[in-house]
Image (cartoon, rainbow, N blue to C red; front, side, top):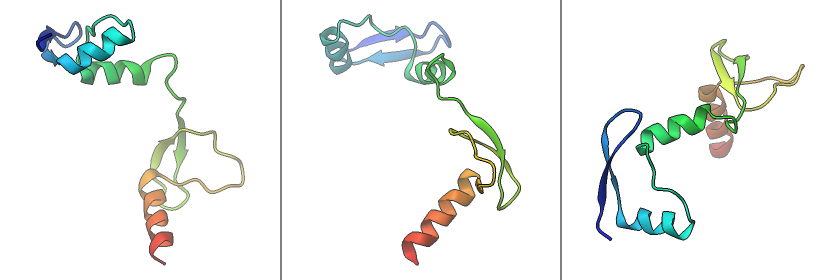
Amino acid sequence: MPDIEVPCVQCKEVFLFTEKEQEIFYQRNMMPPQRCPKCRSKKAATGDNAPTRFEIVCDNCGKHDQVPFQPKVGRAVLCRECYNASKSRVRFA
């Protein structure tokens, strides 16, 4: 099976459906992809099974952000940058 060039039905870009990917799709009895990897990930992120995101205001810096969990009243919630910074301080302290 040679690699196949497939036009994406969404963005019209041509992407490569490699021999290895073809084998995986065949083994799983799946239809060949119609969307490029970028469009597939966008579709998955907005689909029905996409994780719910909650709007927050960071208790540390005041920045607006989204988190994948329901914030609890009375508990501090941090934006991604502040959370990552606090994790790195704990690790090296």
